[in-house]
Amino acid sequence: MLAKSSLRHPDGAVYFITNEPEENMIVTASISSDGSLRLDRAVAAGGHGLHGVTANNGNTATDGLFSQGSIQASAKGGVLAAVNPGSNTVSLFSINPRKPTNISPLGDPISSEGEFPVSLAFNNDGSRLCVLNGGKVNGVNCYTVDNKTGLVPIRNSLRYLGFNQTTPANGPPGTVSQIIFSADGKKLLASYKGAATAAAPGYLAAWDVQPDGSLSAEHTQIALAQGGMLAFSLTPIPRENAFFVTDPGLGFDIVDLSGRKRDAAVPVSGQMATCWSARSPTTGSYYAIDVAGNVIREVQLDGNLKSTVVGSYSVPAGTAPLDGEVATIRGKDYLYVLGANTTSVEAFSLNGPGQAKRVTAVDIAGPARAAGISIHGANLQGMTTFVPSH
Image (cartoon, rainbow, N blue to C red; front, side):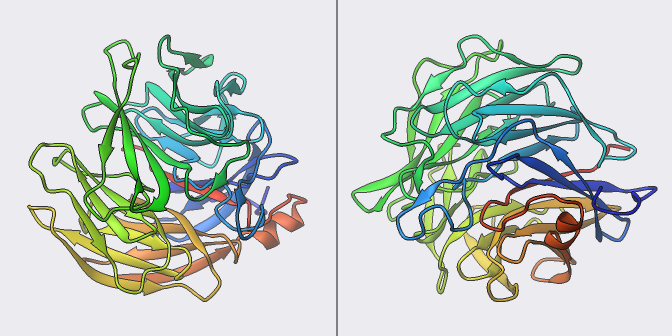
């Protein structure tokens, strides 16, 4: 336990992984009615973590997986999934809706059928899960979610991308980033960063999803708009068949799959490395997280997907904000962001468009140390939320 006692009546929970090579752990925190957080417990993820290699920092920089979505919850399915990058496995847990920090393994960890798994995606109802592998053996693989036995591989869903990579991956350029289903569940998409040059930009890889969950034998490449460089996050734009895609080489991209040609590559003045994003259903805004700039920018899109930056929110220097996720608590939205260097979770109250306010930062390292749990900021990764349906 990371706290003396659990919150009696939590409204939800947040989860992230330690990604430690000795043992990967899932850290849980309860969400109170006012959106505040309380660390609760750490649960073994069932495998080992692994840190990617960067040209300048070896394996000591933050964002060791070069990805978004390393841990994912499905509210409809009542389940949580996490990658074990050093074991090449995926683990599944059931979530107790009354005490969502209480998670229990469903079956054993299962092979990702590749190397260095970094991102996960549930379909809309939580009945299927797909994983994105980013190492020497890279590509995607999918499973049926069985609430008794765990993950069951789906035939003809293992698809390789064939990128020239290593295990662990070398990056961030040249690595995969995030996997996601389209809103209608008929496509599976993965973002690839490319080589960070105009001659070899990133793109999205897309497979058709068949009714039985199998994937098309080949994937199609969806190009970024002219000027786009490094496709990182994939945040759906509701009812538009389009995605808000962070781009650390530029700012962000709009990728439009509707055929209406609203794609855009949007440079953001002063951005340094915008890698993660989340959307608030209440404000309608997209929150783009700049790890090197220690800033979160709020973006609004109009009906033509034209963008406007309506807010900019700083976190303390050296925080290195990574993955973020929004939770709706009693009709109000809160953004939770993993602060890697400060081993904290930053919480923002989203009071309206352009009105986000940093309300608290919860320390992770102190309680973890007291509980004998190994935590290093360079390894921390992921952020997902669960709010039970009422």
